[in-house]
Image 1 (cartoon, rainbow, N blue to C red):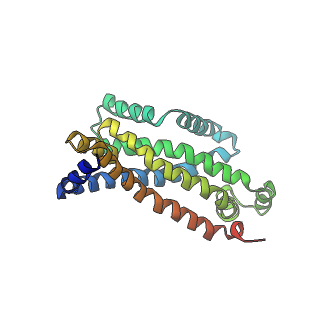
Image 2 (tube, one colour; image 1 turned 135 degrees about the vertical axis):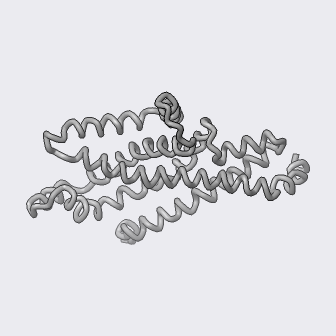
Image 3 (cartoon, rainbow, N blue to C red; image 1 turned 30 degrees about the vertical axis):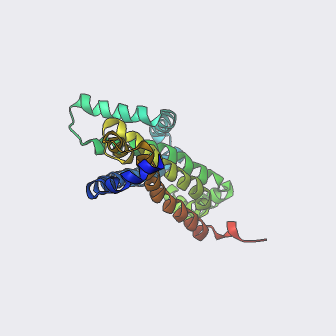
Length: 231
């Protein structure tokens, strides 16, 4: 087996195969980045909507709750297929990458909304009351009072989700998006050993996700130093 792997190495790491894997890695990285950025923005917006107390905004609050609870419980593959066939039925001719990007953004928004809301809820109610007494609106309260304190609770699970999310983008291969898992299947079908192909895919996934996890840890230390101080 090892002799076969060594024999395949020169052909596997040929110019066109490396270029093919590079394009697939960029697609995986792009899907992950879009999902994380758009999901964070939408998740923050959803969390803020759910925190409003106005009766006029009650329908919007219920829609936000319905969105979060639905997409947190529906598997990513089901969401992907739902979005894919919805665009097909509507007649919209969107690139598969765009369809996958919309799907990952919906999933990320639902999960990150709960992470952000949990961080906001961790701040003592006295802080909210003090901001209200100073005539702060909701946005000013969150920006100047709550968010600086909530970061230390939000960051660890958020970056943990980001790392897991990179692996979940592999399901985009089910609709034909050229990402790492899809590229691995193509190279395996070309005759290269599955052990060699998917070992290379594993290493690329690790190379993408490990720096992100380290960046999250460093960011957590910088924004919440008190958690790491000794007694």
